[in-house]
Length: 161
Image (cartoon, rainbow, N blue to C red; front, top):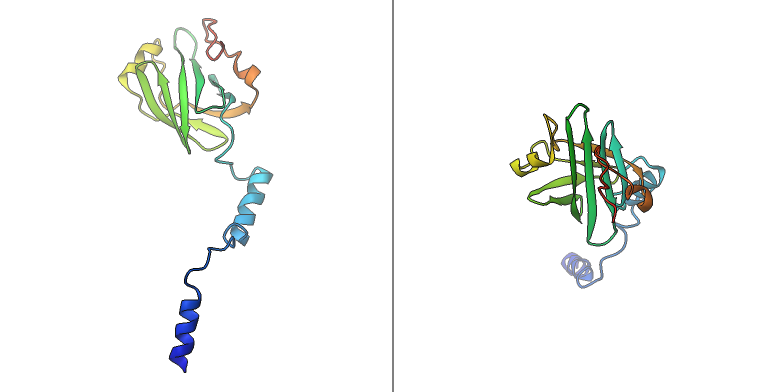
C-alpha cells in the first residue's frame, strides 16, 4: 500500500506545467520592490542617455539593437580622449566599436564600466597620457536630446547626427 501511494505521488508530478510560483515567490517580490525603490539596479534599464563621472563623459543615442556612442575624457593640458562609434548590448555586456578600437564594457543599469585594459588601437583616440581604460560613468539622464549634445574638448559632437 505504501509503495502504491508513493508511486502515485511521484507520478502525479509528471507531465504538469511548471507553476509561476518562482515569479511570485517572496524572493522575486523582494527583488522587484528593491528595483522599484532604486536599491538594486535594473539590468534591463535603457542604455540611451548621458553618463558622467568627474571629467569622463559618455553619450548613447538610439534604442535599437545598435546605438551611437561617444566618449570624452578630459584631464586638461592635452590629456584628452574623444571617440564616436557604435554600441550594441547583450545583457550586461556592451560591445563598443570606435573604428579599429573595439572592446566590451559592463553595464549594470546605473553605471557603465570600461575594461582596465583596452586594445592598442584605442591609443590613437587619445592625446598625452589620457586613456579610455577603466572609464566608469554613472547615469545623468535618459534624455536623447541631452545625450546628442555631448561634445569633445575640441567642440566635435560625439553622438549628434
